Length: 476
Image (cartoon, rainbow, N blue to C red):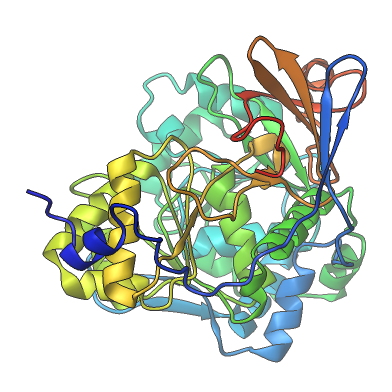
């Protein structure tokens, strides 16, 4: 027996025409393809991006002027607790400047980045923005390297590459062993809670927020440019030691300009995000985190996870906060469709304001795809745009994106504006290589790895093998 909504199943089955999409403005690209004598194909979009800032926090400052009381970040006091702790745009600018001064007064610098050991939190967001604002790189590290390792091997390698001047963790108790194992003696230890780590001198995050900013903060901000390193993201290291991917201000800014060009509905109303994905990964740590303040939106930190148990918290949050743009991995969407069948209030809240769903990280099963479209139709009388794309930590990640309606998963789309995609023949498929302003300049203190990552024309070797959805039609 089919347990999907009957009305949607009937409307979307057989030879019937698919129901219309909910209106949401997206790009209308014109694609150009050049075939080279060596068999390579070069694919680009016509046109150029409009002007955009070269410093990441410039947009945040602009929105703080326009909407100082609007929520920027929110987090529950504890998972399952009622209410939200919120930081408005105006409050974040004040916190960012105070913490920026504290960073300038600390051992942290352009050569001694800030290392963040713990996961998504209001403190993490504030520290990240403050560091970017004054031109000090920060590196969000997977908490698993601190909490699930016995010898801290990967964490020691990361700390050795970074030589951090400041190390932050949300809890001295949970991260004490990791801090003791990898933190340089002259680095400042900052804790969200306790201020003691096995006798190691440390300060509380709250005390740094009491720092009085001076003119040095604005001078540091004025010195930030497109080539200034904003952050360093470490790859998972599944095939070796994690390597630090440099993320410059110009790279991240170009990436957000590309996102805005593609998802044009973000300009029509400030986005609302409910997001669990970790900030030590590029998907949420770059794309979702940055698009929030780029468009004056609000980011609700979801402490759930795409697991049967973790989805309880995610669904609780989604029943309270209706997103306008939503990201999850296919397993998370599969669990959501099961919950939709059991909870009509959850389904209505989820789809109420939603303009787009995006998945990444794996292929989506057809039954999940069909269920999402069916639930959207039953709730709204429309489908909601369901899309994917292709990118990596090195590409910012936004590089190749799909927006056209599709009958099934798997279509990654076309290169973003000002991204050049080179397709190199490899058997019956095509190896993808990319070039743009949104590509990393290389790996932190690893020139040999940087050289290996780019081909003789300066294209980043993405490494993924692709094929056309329709023969010889790059636009599809």
